[in-house]
Image 1 (tube, one colour):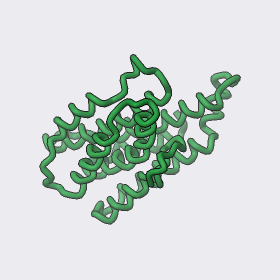
Image 2 (spheres, helix red, strand yellow):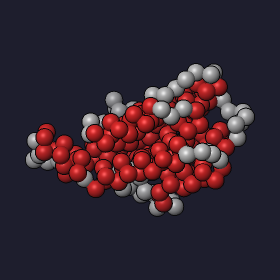
Image 3 (spheres, helix red, strand yellow):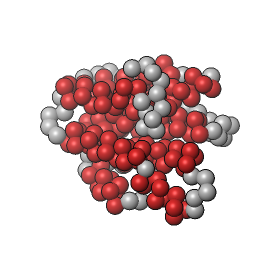
Length: 206
């Protein structure tokens, strides 16, 4: 792990409550095009349901007493996540990253209802997004590089620099008070990133 990523995770460990969920939801928004393209190109998954679930996460952030059954949503999500035992493609892997990130959002909201502390999920979602970028660089540019050279190449890559910069911007926004509707709207717009995902894929829907 790079020093920069380690520093990021220290701060993420300190996120709690709505700030933690807002960070995860923003990263999940940016991952969503990967799932949408997997579903579109492979005829798998359920983009409408995933979109609705993420919308419910944002609703819960905006409306503190929103009546949402997060446990039921988590069960539904499990039913439509990619099965990488059957499909080991890169597309399935990054689509699974999306559903795992969304699952972290739902679990954190469920834990909040049950008054349980949940500080690990922001780090997990951060790692999912960074890991997807690393795998994409390795797949597209890693041929002929040994482990040390590949690691250096990934860490210096423009996509990885953009990913780390994005996460720091999101973190700084959620750390600021108040986390009101305007701030949440800004985070959601940032996460949608004009329809471009963390690995540069686009659905052209924005």
